Structure formats: structure tokens, C-alpha cells
Length: 287
Ligand code: PLP
Image 1 (cartoon, protein in one colour):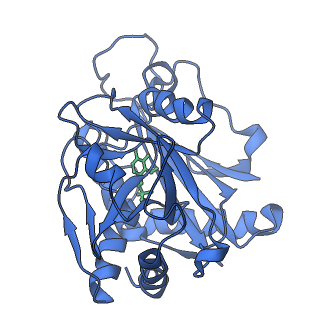
Image 2: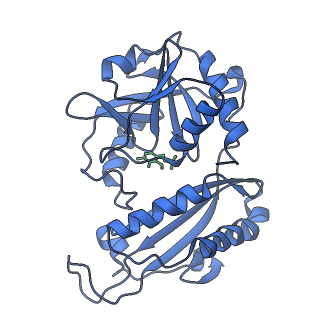
């Protein structure tokens, strides 16, 4: 496939960075994953503004304007669509602080950031009939990451270890709870529950990523007349929910049927999920 590196397009196998890059040495960078379907991105403005906020938080100058990011995204889709042989393409953007001559913790002054992008195949849009959906099973663990989970940092070891715990348990993801036993998010997704027809997701704070899919889904559900609130819920409330869903750019709104070995609701994909995914599809390109 064709990658973007520091202003140029090249085969991914030819894209090379310095081992002194602070993204490599410290995980000192910000990234985004933007889904596109038949060339149409979902949540482009949300993704680029979250990236701008993350870069600001770690004091890296945003190397491009929104219009320039838009051109890079479209070019990566266009150059890769035939190679990937799919209309479902994820675009990865990554800005690290760049390469220094020394390995020293403090932010070096006057170094050029490393800007990287590539394209990869993502799952097709979620089906709208529950019989066709892939049901997820998830593990449950105490969140052992840092106190700045709202920053979409490339330092993902905490997330990787939580995700791997799920893989080791033979499931697809790991849902996380904080020291008070309240659900925050999953290792690579946000979490929603349904109880008695009411949809809830944890409110935003430093313990979770402000997911773009989460935001679009909330708007889409409201638009469709579904009841949705941003409220904390506990591990016990998660396990007693009628339905549990995960949201992310690559999964859209995905139904969960088992948490920590226990069935959720009937143990099958729920009725409200069908309404939710239809509402999401009807709205996602308008967000
Ligand atoms: N939470 C975490 C920790 C993530 O890594 C991600 C996405 O990769 C999400 C939530 C979902 O965010 P988005 O919907 O913007 O993809």
C-alpha cells in the first residue's frame, strides 16, 4: 500500500523514520483512525479537531490545516483503493514530536514533527439485522492506564495490555472500570448499555477517550428519538444491563452478548441495537 510520510507519498515498505524519533523512544505523539466507506469519511471534523486538541495538549504544533489533512486523507484513499481491493478503508494519521539527536525527556525545541499516514482495510458497515451481526464477548478488568485517557496518545502499552488480557481469555475486547468500580470505556472502544429502553454511556472526563463514534452515535440516537443519557454505571449495572454495545471507528456500534463469561440480557444481540445501528447508519455521514 501507499503511505504518507512528511509530505510525500511512497510504498509503505519504503517509509522510514529515525530510531531517535520520540514517537519510537517515548510514544511521544498523537494519532487518529478515520473510517471511510466508498471514499466518504465518517466524522472527519471530529477526528481532526480531536487530533488538534491532543497536539495542543502535548505542545506539538499542528503541521497541517484541516483542508490539508482532508487532501492527505482523500489522496491516501484514492492511491490505495485498488491496492486494498475494498471500499472500506481506515486512514491512520500520526504526528510524533520528531527525531532528536539526544534521548532526553524534556520537549526539545525546534525539531520537525514526524507526520505519517497509511490506509488499511476495515470491516464493512455493521449489518442492520441482528441475525447478521457479529456478537462480541468481552473481558472485564480494572483500568490500569494513566490519568490522561482523553488524549489520543500513541503511548498505547496500557491499552495493548488490557486488550491482550481479553485475547488471552478468548474474547474480543476488555471493558474497563475505575477504582470506584464505575465503567470508563474499553481498551479500544467506548461502552454503552441499555436498561429498560434507556441508553447510557459514561460522561467524558480524563478516564476515557472522547470517541468520535460515541459522539456521532449519541446525536444519531437523539435524532431518531431514542432515549440516551451520559451517566456513570457500575460493573454490576453493566452485568445486569439488557444490552451492552461497544463503539469505535472500525466497529461502529457493535453488540456485546457476554461480559466476563456472563450472558448479557438474553445472551443474544438485542432489539434496541437494531434500532441504534439503523439510526447510526442514517446519520453517520451527516455528522
Ligand atoms: N477508546 C479508546 C481507548 C480507543 O482507542 C478508541 C479508538 O480507537 C475509542 C475509545 C473509540 O474512539 P473512536 O470512536 O473515535 O474511534
